[in-house]
Image (cartoon, rainbow, N blue to C red; front, top):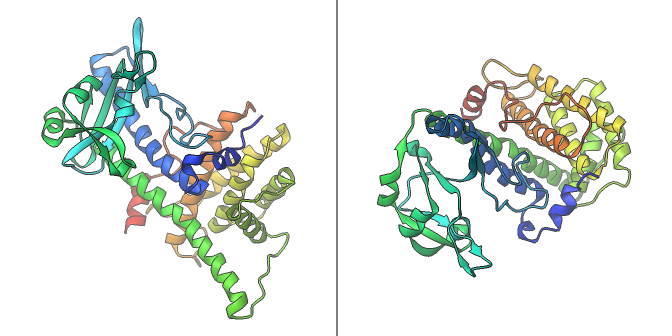
Length: 374
C-alpha cells in the first residue's frame, strides 16, 4: 500500500504553516548539499581509511523529504569498514563567515533516558563546511561541548545550542581544492531550485488575474474540457484548496494520454504538475504503473531534446527562452521527485534509474545556471 504523502503531511503539526510544495523545496535544499558533499566526503575518508565505505543514512537516505514531514533526527552519513564498528557523521555548513558557530544541543548531546542527562553522541563526528572559504573540519561532539558556551539561536526558533567562537573554529578549519566545486555546485543548484519554484507563484498570479477579471471586466472564465490546459487549471485549483478527485486513477490515465499529442515545454510543465498532484492519491496497479513509468520517460526525453548549447531550453520560438527554461527546470524538479518516490514505494520492475544528485537530469548544470543568472 502506497503512503498518501499529502494526507500525512497535512497531519504533521510542525509544518502546517507551509504548503506541501514549500516544504519539499526546503527539504531539497538540505538534500542538495548532502548529495553534493557525499562523493567528496568519500574521498576524504578513504585517504586515511582505504577500506571504508561512506553513504547517506537515516530516513532521508533515498528520499529527500520525509513522508510525515519534519526532518530526520538520525545522522546524515554512515562510515562502514570491515571489522570496525559503524561511525556516523552529522553535516552542517555556513553560507558565510560568522562571528560564532552554533550546534544544536539535541544533535550533539541528546538526552540519555536511563542516565537522565545529556551525553555526547557516540561514534559520531560533525562535518562543518564554511562555503565561501571552501574549508572544512571534522569535529567530535566532546570537543564542541568543551569549547563552547550554551545559549539559544533565534535563527532556529530559539533552540538551545552550543556556540563556538570564530577563533576556535578557524583554528580547526582546513582547505581542500576539491571542495571548491562542491560548494559552487550547492549554490548553483539551490539557485536553480529557487528559480524553477517561481513557476508556482506565476501560475497563482495568472489564475488570480483571470478570476479578478470576472468582477473587474465582466469576463466569463472558462475551463475548457478535454484540453490539457483545462485539466491543469482544475488540478491547480484543487491543489490550492486542498481537495482531491474521487476518480484519481482514471484521471491519471486520461492525463497521460496527452503525451500522444505535440507538447511544448509549458505544456510539459502543466502535465508534470498534474502528474505530481495525482500521484500520491493513487495506489497504482501494474498497468497504471507501466503507463506512469512510460510517461516519465517520455517527459524526460522531450525535455532533453529542447536543451540548447547555451544551457537554455526552448521548444517554441514564440516563447522567451528564459520562460521556457523555467518550465523545463520545473518539470525536471517534479519528475526527479516522482522517480525517487516510485522506486521507494513500488516494487514494479522498471528501467527508471535512481536520482543520485538533484537536478542530474539537466545536461549541463554550469551552462544552465549561467543562462538563468545572466
